[in-house]
Length: 242
Image (tube, one colour):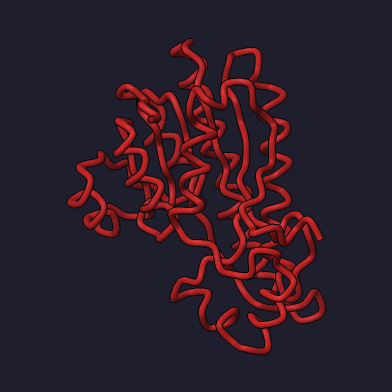
């Protein structure tokens, strides 16, 4: 059983479905979890449930991230905070929405990595970072140009960070979930004409659960993955192996 021995791990997007599942599993594995979201009020539920600490900040604000992480001792990070944006083709996309998606998903991931890694290097005990990407960065999905592009940028941030931080014994990996059928995704993927053909192409033929995303994240943070860095792990029921 994984035991983090009280290591401090930051989880962004901790008020969301996947983020809160990651917090629960990390707390169960004896991690000292620091949950983050845009505001403290949104974290009240997960704090009451798990007893985790909080460090709220806006992922689009370098000033807030620097202030929150500057003196926060961290061993690990899960970059899970994100923005889905819009369902639109390249011809129809709203560039303002595209910019917002990139600002939250890509720029936000880089900013958290920037300031968290400085602390991890200062502490000198190594650590691990896991970025929550998407299957949309590995294969083209219709109407996902903004989201897929932002997650492809996250993948490059993952690779370059793994290259740069390895000498400090800091590992950086990403996970790539398929669709988690949340209330937010139901409006699109719940349509029979959209979700049906998608599942027919997936070998396992079902939607991924939040806990099925959280468990591989916990593994990649753990010492059991101590020789894994720069990896991109699909959690997609085999969809991207087609």
